[in-house]
Amino acid sequence: VSGKRFRVLIADDVSPECMALFEGDDRFEVIQDKLRGEALLKAIGGFDGLIVRSGCKVTAEVLAQATRLRAVVRAGVGVDNIDTAEATRRGILVMNTPAGNTISTAEHAMTLLLATARSIPRADRSVRAGTWKKPGFLGVELRGKVLGVIGLGKVGREVARRAKGFEMEILGFDPMVNDDFARQLGVKLAELDEIFAKADFITVHVPLTPKTKGLIDAEVMNRLKPGVRLINCARGGVIDQAALIEALKDGRVAAAALDVYESEPLAADHPLTGLDNIVLTPHLGASTQEAQENVGIMSGRQIKAYLLQGEIENSINTVSLDAQEVARIEPYVKLMHSIGGLQAQLLDGKLQRIRVLFAGAEFADGGARRRKALVLSALEGFFRHYLNAPVNRVSVMHFAKEHGIDIDEAKSTDSGGFENLVTLEVETDAGRRIVSGALFGANRPRIVMIDGYTMDAVPEGIALLFRNDDRPGMLGIVGQVLGQAGVNIANVSMGRDMSGGTALAFMNIDSEPNAVLRAALEALEGVPWLRIATL
Ligand code: 3PG
Image 1: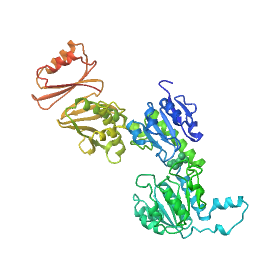
Image 2 (image 1 turned 90 degrees about the vertical axis):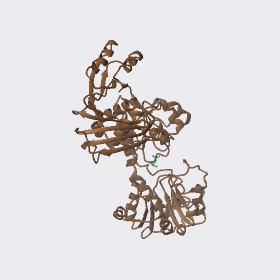
Image 3 (image 1 turned 45 degrees about the horizontal axis):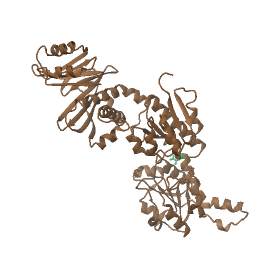
Image 4 (image 1 turned 30 degrees about the vertical axis):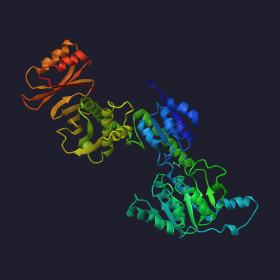
C-alpha cells in the first residue's frame, strides 16, 4: 500500500460484521478491544478512527489524548457518551447510525409495555419459586387504553404504529410533528398535561437534554392518572428515578419498566431492584441480531468512507455529503479553499463578517448541502491562517462563532456570465474585499474577479498581487525586478477599472520573494498596493 494505514479502534461490543468489512483491506488496521480508563487514554493517540456503542465514554480527557483521531462513529443513536462539543473543537467528526436500531427499540418498548400489563417477570419468578398464585397477577388489557407517546421521532412513531395494532388510543406529544402527519400515524396530538392526566400507559422516546431531564418528576407523578404504567427505553433520567421509586411504592404508578438508567450499569443494590412492580432490563433496546448487524455495518462503512474519501454520512457535528456529492463538488471545494486562503492573506483591518454568495444551477434549490460544504471549505481555507488549533470543516464554524464573526450564505442570480459562480466577501472595519471564482471546463478553477477587476487567475502556488497605475510598461518594470532577483513568472492575469485608471495584477511566481525583493517591489513608483499570498 502506498501512504499510511488507517488505524481504527472498536471499543465496544460491535457486531463481527463491522470488523469483517475491513478484512483483507490492507489500508486499515482494526483492533477490537473494550479499552477503558488509563488503558484507553494511553492507546487512543494511535488511532484515526473510533467506533463505540454506549459503553465507551469518549470524554474530553480521552479526546485530549486523541491527537490522530479524525472520526468517532456511534454504532447506534445516542451520542451522550461522546463529548461532541469537544470533538468539534478538535475537528473530530462525530457520526451515528440512526436508522439501524429503530425497530428493535420500538419492539422492546412494546415488550416492556406488555410485560407491565401482565406482570410477566414477577409471574415468571413466582412460578420458579414454586408458588402458583393467580390472584396476585390480575393484569389489564391494552385494547381501548390510552397510550401516551412522548416523542414521535423514529422510535416513537414505530411504537405508535404497533400500539395501534393492539387497538390502543394514542396520544402523542412532539413539538416537531404536525397534525397531518400525526393523523396519518393514527395519533392524536396532545399537550403533555393532557397525556399526564389521561394516559393509562406512557412511553418516552426523547433524547436526554436539559429540557427532557426529569420530564416526569415528583411534581408530575402527582398529576398522572392513578394506576398509570410508565415505560422508558430512551434515556435514563427522562423519568426521574427517585420520584418513580416513591410513586411505585405507594401505587400511584401501578407498574413501570426501565431499560435505561440515570447511571449505567445499575448497581445491584440500587433501590429500584428492591421493587416488585418494576421490570428492569440492562439497556437492551438495540440488542437484537438485526439491529446490531445494521449498526455494525453502517458504522464500519461510514468510518471507511470518511477516512478514504472524505464522504460524510449521519454527521452529528458537520454537514453530511455522500461520495457522489463529494466528487461533484470537489473542484469547487478546492477553489473555495483557495479563495478563503487568498482572502485571509489580503485581509486589512479587523474581521467582522464573511459572506458566501452562490450563483448558477449547481447551487440553486436543492443544493443546500453543497453550498454548506463550500461555505465550510472557504472558512477552512480562511481560518487556517489565523488559528493554530486544528481547523477543518468540522471545527471551523465553532471557531468563527467563538470569534464573534458573522457568517452568512446567500444565493445570487448574477453569475457574471459563468455557468456557476462562487464569491467570498470579507468585511472588516477597513472595508470589504470581494473575490469570485468559477470553473473553466470541468475542473480548472480560476479566480475571475477581485474587487471589481475581472481576470482569469490560477489560484495555485505563490501569487504576487499588486495594483498599479494603468500606464505602459508597468508590468515590465515589475517583471524586471523579479527577473533580476531570479524569480520566474509562471502566469499573469490583469484587470483594470478603465483605461488610464488602476489595474490589478495577479502573478503566479515560482519562488517566494525574500525580504529584500519584497521591499524593492513595494518601493516601485506607481505600485500603491502589493501582496504575496501562498495558495
Ligand atoms: C442507542 O442509543 O442506539 C441505544 O441506546 C443503544 O445503545 P447500545 O448500543 O449501547 O445498546
